[in-house]
Length: 175
Image (cartoon, rainbow, N blue to C red; front, top):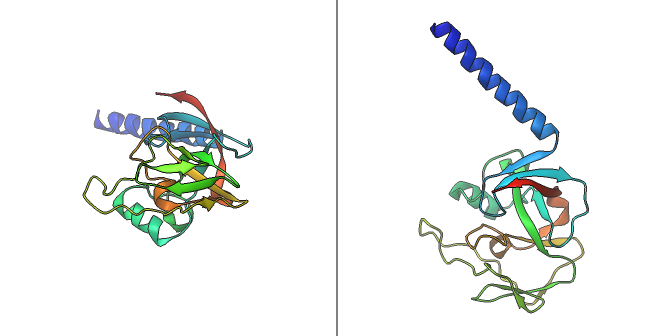
């Protein structure tokens, strides 16, 4: 009896892993964070543009090392051992960004949910990228959450080079 249960369990686990690998190979990605709507997304080869959801590898920096240590991002297969991140492109080349206590302003308009947090849930001081009338360069993107005021995003780590983006993702099912 125990042997049958063990074989059934192992078979179920292996079957689940095969399904996960097939879905990954088919370009499906799962988001469980509050940065973008929770759900299943499909990786596309669409061009990166303002308003698109993207999946990217964070650049290897001390800031992202600390973010991983604090649990803001997971471990994964990106350089530096970081996990992929998913955000929305809210500013691109030539957009002007200004940091204020209210949040980030893009070309004069305040981004909703962009007010920086002083501390995280554990009471640790949050980093803050200071945009002082910063104009994004040709390959720079501002990657943010537009659905959560507590996301670890561009208000903390600044602009990201477009070369870090692995693709545009489109929602299949969101909750």
